[in-house]
Image (tube, rainbow, N blue to C red; front, side, top):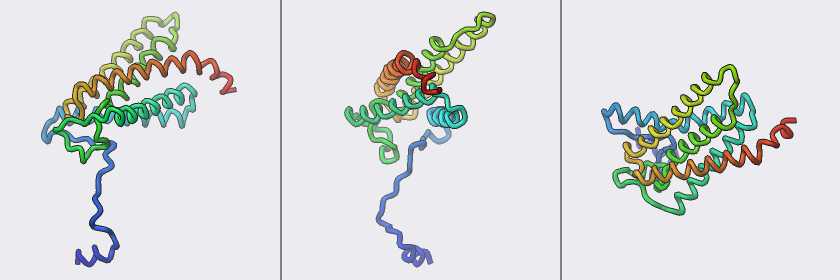
Length: 200
């Protein structure tokens, strides 16, 4: 019966199928810590979902330009991977991965772009209210520390789960910080003065 169904379906059984592994994360079976790190490694997708929601409901120009920077950062990562062409650690099964190249780590670069940009935005763009200066400063420090902590955890998760080497993660972080710094400067110095004109 199975052979009859298979033959009548018209499907080509010789085709190799691979998973769309954009969110495909493996961890050691039975390892609770590894599972937790695997969940943390999905943080970039949570952030992207947040961006899309904010843009759809608020349509804030700064959020949109921030998101454009995130996309440009990802494009830079893809270009760098294909220029450097450094493979992932041999321990990984590259047939199940979204990309065979590991330098620089896209997760690390994404998270450190986001963290560095948020730090600049928090301490440069956001202004204090005089009567709540200490309280606002406390929440700014807490928010900045949270961004850095999550970036560190996600970066480490890529090493622990053997998707990247230390070098690939460190270079990803450096590229993310550099691109985040450049993009914040462009937005804050060049683009922001034109926001009122665009809105009006």
